[in-house]
Length: 161
Image (cartoon, rainbow, N blue to C red; front, side, top):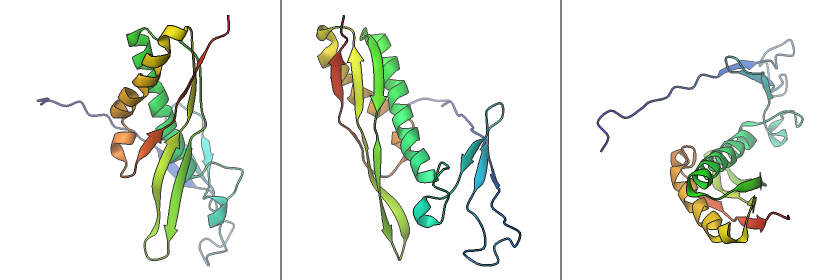
């Protein structure tokens, strides 16, 4: 057991930009638009999902949760591949999350499926490349923080010479 675990703090300022002039006078009187401001980084425009009266041209919290899981898995995976001698030349994940909406308790994620398509340099790296997805999952900070399954179905390709 670690005597002095490391802690990390992340700051995000969320600013509602959807006041159309009458505030939240009614459920339909305001926009769900908002900005995420993170020190030293570009502003990220957010909204609610279009199904919840949001702007479909802006990022919503549900998409960002899936993106966080995908990104965290990828970063751990690439790190582990570098350490284990697996040369990755391309990585793309078409992740999808399933949320269930219940009237009495709002919504919740039922699962997220990561579908990374990874290209490795040599055929001899394929099995290790597949195996490292499990290890990346175990190390992913975000996956370790959610209360639903995060699964992965990886495809490994060999780079064309």
